[in-house]
Image (tube, rainbow, N blue to C red):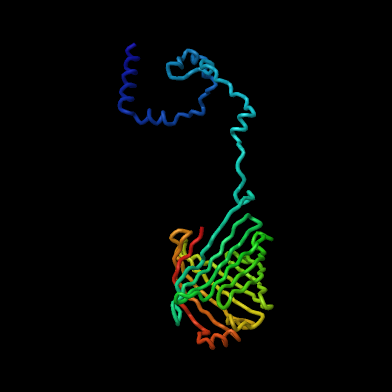
Length: 299
């Protein structure tokens, strides 16, 4: 009995002092050598644990949920109502108007107010096109014309047009039959080619092209070109056969909103052949550059 007490006291001293031998023995225990299979897990009374006290609820303890009803035809109709057709394919009537140029031009002889407008009304395939352009100088209308054309789309990018053109100035009024094509052969390049048959067997051809170059989201540079050719001389209206005149322009606009944009730019106009001869007789310039400033709007 005395020996047992001494051994127990010695063991307590060793554990208290943290004897290296005891700590090393604990660290070097081979847990893999322990036969866990010999442990009697059945002696653990899991069933005696009170799970409800720990906040757990047995699966069968809660009430059953209300069954989800089977969808009816009325439910399906409410979930998938009939939607209106897309505007571009509805076959309705739409419209568009563009005042591409309403500008002041600083010409050599006098200041000029010039305009170029177009618009359409109709659907995706068939439309009525309206065009107008002209200029006024010193309070007098020097050039003015209006066109009414039926347009029919023949591809996503091309449209054929046919109708009438009425000239009010220069000279006496003149009516033309018009037909041609317009579209975008390249992305963003807008082109028009229109032929005209007028009174007294007169004929004409006008070619137009313009392109928008986006410098920023709001700042846009627009180069433009127009070429006019005539089949016969018309001294009263100041045009000669062949290549009559050309106009090249470069306009820089700032879109405050997409529908409204002020701009500045330059244009260069030149007459050729008999048209240049008629202009010289009237004391007009055949080669002229102009500074322009105006607004562009659409709706």
